[in-house]
Image (cartoon, rainbow, N blue to C red; front, side, top):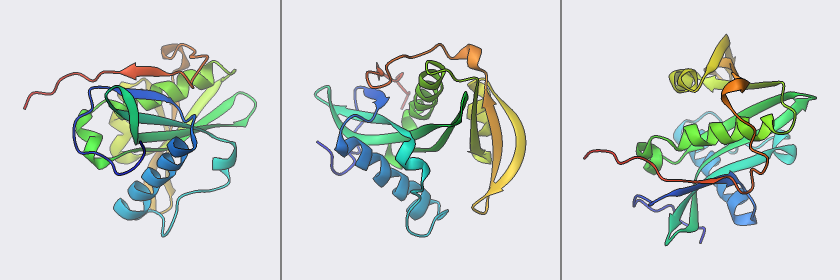
Length: 180
């Protein structure tokens, strides 16, 4: 199952909370590839104390409709009662052309927190991703610098995200076809 990321286009993707050890490890491996190797934001690893209490959500490519590899991830955690944060959103570079995996992970993050009593959902978003978040009904709050990279602190419009009571089930996502 888990292993090297495949370069073929999966027929669909499971968007759900990591339920198995290989899924959680795959999320950590993907984050290291994106935030350490590709973007150089961290020197050796991006993991921190938040990981211990966070829910790790994943986009899983499929092979014969079975989960195959972690190709996207985001983590969510409650920092204080009613205040939730999303962070470390990452999509494998071979799957960014799918175009919707990041948005689906964001939806699951906010919807799952909304089902657990979320009053406010926040994220620090890299500036190049602000447009995506604005399309998904997020409001910019303030510019900040994190780890030497410009970010925008943003808040989700919770009315746009109906509660998803079971993030471990999540959903199966079939992306639209992209013209060649």
